[in-house]
Image (cartoon, rainbow, N blue to C red; front, side, top):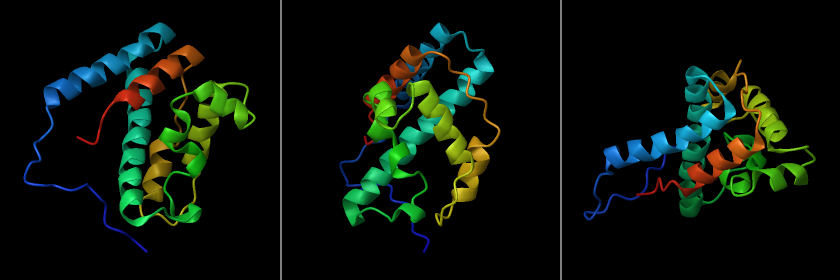
Length: 157
């Protein structure tokens, strides 16, 4: 059953975000890729995919606060891949799931999302987004830095 997206409450005290500051924060986060020697086009793609995972998780967390969680087959992103589950300590989380490191975990996550079958109304879009993505990260410290900086990003303002 399709559901309307939840965009949070818009009280009369709501003020729009400062997009200049937000842009500066995003640029600072993207700088973590320089240590991993990733070319700029790959940096943009991988950053966009991780930002999407963070944004979608924030939307789902707000929705769950209002109405509760969806069954696994109706979720767009499987529970084990939700950003808030792994972002604070990607290496430990990956090892708990049987992966050698966070790089192997994220490679598998991207592959699974590219093949995700779900009843969610935008599941096809998710598959197209992750399909044919080459995961360029080679360094767990880069992934940890990216996840940490994205976790700190407050998207609920």
